[in-house]
Image 1 (cartoon, each protein chain N blue to C red):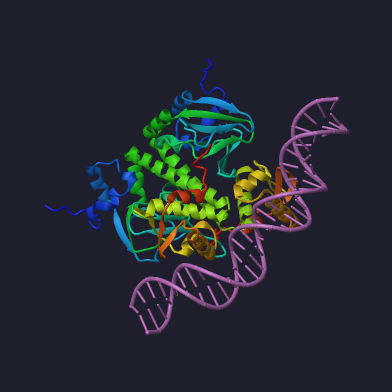
Image 2 (tube, rainbow over the protein chains, first blue to last red):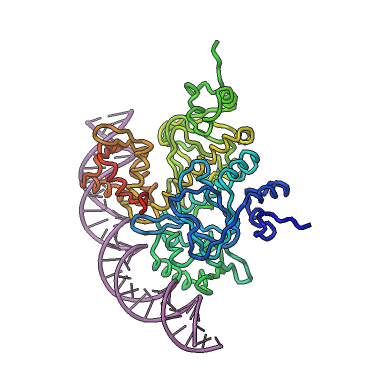
Length: 242
Length: 242
DNA sequence: CGGACCATTGATAATTGTCAAAATTCGTGG
DNA sequence: CCACGAATTTTGACAATTATCAATGGTCCG
C-alpha cells in the first residue's frame, strides 16, 4: 500500500529531514508534521517574501537558494543571508506578529515548504526539543551576524572578502586535489551588496587576489582556493587569540 | 516573618522581575528560580567574560551596563551590544558548549545574577513559555543586528550616526519639553568602535550635526535632540517603503 | 590645582566610490 | 555548433570620503 503524504512533492520527505530543528523527532512525529506542510515554487528572480509583508507561516527552503536583503531609502540593497536547502525563515514573526524585516528573493528555481504560524507554535509547545533546537539555530545565526558585523565594521575590504570566501567555502565549497572549489551562489553585485562595498571594488580585489596566487578564477561563478589558510589570514579574524 | 531569598541582594527581587523572559512566571515559580541564582559585582572596566572563555551559566545584568565586543588580530575592537538592566548573555553557549564569542566588560559598576547552565536548561524544558520568550528575545536581537549590518554596510557615516542615536534614544533617552535627552552609555571611542569608524570621525560628525542644529551637546555624555524626526531622516532607514 | 584621560580640530594620505568605456560571459535562436 | 545581443564583469581615471598622525583644548576627579 502506498501512502500519499501531503508532502509527497518532497522526494524522500526531504523538506523535513533536511531541517536540523526537526532532527530529534521520530518518524511517527515527522509524518504528523508532514501533513501540516504546504508547498510552493518560485522561479529565479521571484520574490518569496517582501520586506514589511505580514507573514503567517514559517518557510523552509527545500531546493535552490535565496537571498534575504534589506533596501535603504536610496535604493541600496544589503544582503543579510543566503539561504539554501534546509534553511528557514519567518520564525521571528511567529510570536510578535511583526512584518518581515527583509525581502527574500530566489537566486535559482526554489521549492519551499510552509508551516503555518499556529501549527509551528503548537509544535514548539509540544516538543521542547524543537524549541531548544530553534534556540540553538538562532544562536548560530546571531553568532554569524556578529562575525559579519565585525567583518564589515572593521572596514578593511580585504578582511571582508576573506570573510565571505571562508563562509562560502564552508557552505558551497567542495575539496579536490587542487584545493577547495567554491561555487558562488551570488553574482559580483550580490557579493558587493553582501559586503557593503561597490561592485567594482569586489572585482578589483578578486583580481588582485588572483595575481597574488591566493585564488584562481575558474569561471564567473567558480573560484579555486589552493590554500585555505591564506584566506583565513586574509580574513584576519581573531580565532587565534593569544 | 522575614523570608531570606538567596537573591536577597537584588532589592525587591529585581534581577528576576526585570527579565522579560521570566515575565510569564507566577511568584511561586519565581521564588524557586531565585533560589538558584548567585550574584557577583564588577567595577567599571573589569571584564565579566572573555572572548573564547567557556561559560557555564547565563548572566543577567541587574544593575549598570556593559559592552560586548570582539577583537581583531590587529587589536581593533568591534562593539556588538551595550547591555543594561534586564539584558542577559551566555545563552548561546548553553546547548552547544562553545566558548563565548565576545568579551563583556563593565562600563559602570555592574551587578549580575548568574543562573547555571543546567538549571537554565531545565527551566526551558519545564516552562515552554520561557523558551518562547527566549526565542522572541533572540529574534529581536537578530533583527537589531540585521539593522546594524545594514547601517554599517551601507557605508555612509551619517546614516550610521543616525542609527546609533535612534537606538540610544530609545534605550537611554528621556523626553522633556526641549526634546529628547540621551545619556550616552559609551565614550566617543566606544561609539566609534560600535559604528566601525575612527574616533575622530565621530567627533567631526557630531560637531557638524551640532552646527546644523540637529543635536545639542549638553555635556560629553549627554546630547539633546530637539527633533527626533531629523535623526530618523539622518538614519535614512527604509521604514517608509512606498 | 594638577594630572590623567578624553575629545576636538587640522593637515595629509590612503582607500574606496563613482562614472565611463572596454572586455568578457552567457543564453538564445538560427 | 556557432553567432549575436544582452547582461555582467573588468579596468581606468578621477573625486569623495574617511583614516591617520599630530597637536591642541577640555573635563573630571583626587
